[in-house]
Length: 460
Image 1: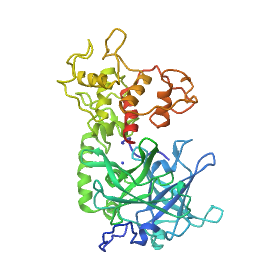
Image 2 (image 1 turned 90 degrees about the vertical axis):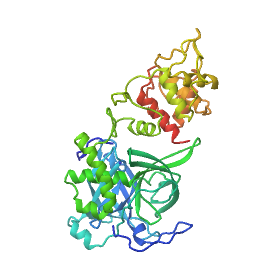
Image 3 (image 1 turned 30 degrees about the vertical axis):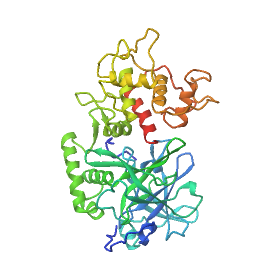
Image 4 (image 1 turned 180 degrees about the horizontal axis):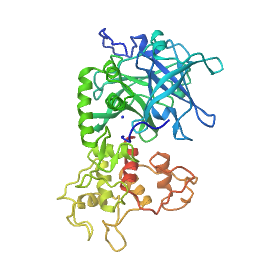
């Protein structure tokens, strides 16, 4: 199926008032029975799974794009099944095949619709399940919240994580820990300390009213920062839906049923402003960085948090090499420091009172960087990949692991940088796949160092 969106990057109304609770309690049957186990078979016959949820009266399912993608073809998988439950005690039954209405890998969202009933062998049979047929089944579905959650608000996540060892739906709970913005006033995704594991992807994330505030998307788990989950916000879902309306794939009435009018007006205003500026719903982080580009998520996060900035013409130049002065600014600010320019200067013959002096001199005092044999720092010299990784790990005070095996073909054991590279790899900071070439002496780019730093910061 052709990807239907440009690169951009992110329901029965509950009329009863829900009492506040000190522990997680599910009040509505639809909250659980609308959750879907999504089973996918790729082009080589391998099975994968994720989660999703019914969000419309005619059986549409929202999930992550990465749940339904075939990595071998780069397209949605040909075989997708919807496995449903009646309650929290029920093992999912793969009752229907599914087809893709829309998907966008930049937002990591996909909409599925039921196809045919499945027999006990998983084969399609009978007539196509059109909207009237699905509506006659009165299949349970859930509403989206009227607004995104607040910092510290409690969240409930439902899905089918593999790690649980349970064949039934699994509930985890946490709070909103941080936000990353799609644009100035819309949340792209938020971080939570609720447990998210493989298999949770695409599942619903609820507020205390059991309305959907987002879609579980990703997780990070390692010894450095523990476990955090990442949730695509309802802001992003609604923004994408408005783009689908413009493309004629869903209608305005459908969106009005799923979201509150005030919410639609708020997000719609931003969508219209973006559309008038770009000619589409495409969101730009910088003039040369869209949400679908490599390292876009990292660059957006660092820009939102004031760690990186663009050039006067509005560009970021993600493919440009990075010099030593620029790298020290990014790393020192990324570590949360703002050195006093009057206290940190004149630490090298070629680092006097320039804009970067406070970063370089602070890093030199901390023992993170040294000069060259001639005593200079060479702030304008470009940094290669292993130098950048070394500085990153030292500035962020990461303990090194002793390398016992080769991760990359061209990173041999016993090199001065091997422990740095292996440690960064084990922490998930590097983009390069294992057993490939790392090219340690290549210059690092602004986009690549943004990615490395971002992957570390979200674990701290």
